Image (cartoon, rainbow, N blue to C red):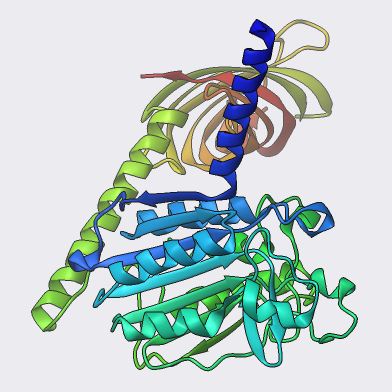
Length: 453
């Protein structure tokens, strides 16, 4: 007996849960203030549980995401999910009463819709559409929605229909329309109507492309939150994105009677008059410069300090009289002006001949020059290059003169430089009372470690 009552309780809870899912209603106050304290209200409807192969996968996600987006735009949102016809009509009646003389009202629907004899109808949950005649009795006529919104003297009315899916009900009709999608509608004054697909065409489910929304709503929920875009710019961008993703199989469509641009988020700042424009431009430039300074400071701090002391060790081949292997030992002091430009203030190198007697032939050089850095290739790696000129001396021949060096390489973990070096010396000296000149090219690899301070 105890188990029997437990079973009854579980079934009761399940029924309550099912009822909530089937006729869900939630009123969500705006999470952010409306623009200029406008009165904005929206009803967002998602229909999914049509049963069998008529059910839709992503429409409840569409409704949730659009409700959240409109909330952020300052709308009080009435969210309806899986409503049957009676509950849908009751909820809409209450919503119509609430929008009277509001600045803006939005009606959004994601679910099955169909066109019959040139009229568009939206299908609630539980609709028994055994024939085309049943459509008028058991669905919601879009023109009735439009008429109710128009009667309430709303400033701007927006209807968004992501309901242009293929009609699954007509398969059971002995006679019926062969039209796909929805029909074109005229927009009364102050009205904007947006369709997920062009008249006579159907909308695609985003699951085909790995999306958890319908393709149309996936792009709309993003574009609608971008500041400074007019409503036309929003839907033009959505149209292009949808058409591109679907290979032009789906092209959204809109119809408008708006006499001027409408913005969900107006361009910022809103400037009136020459003085305001000048002040706005000045403020914008000041902000931009400040952000760039902060960015540069951040980059400089994260990649290297202004002053660097770097010992270096390398190996390569140099030609004096003939080519030989030389060990390269040096030290460098670099001052970095920006994240991308530095100056090698002092670079001292000694290169000793390794063949035969150790360091039997040495070359000393002191140089200075410019150093440049690239942007980061990865978090811990960037490129660099340096070009230096200065003084060189060759101990074995007792010759001195011009020295130059080019180095290119990679900076790892902000401290370790690994580079290819090409060094060139043109030296003059005197031997047996005769003047001579010798060119001493060098090529090799060098590793240095930047001590930042």
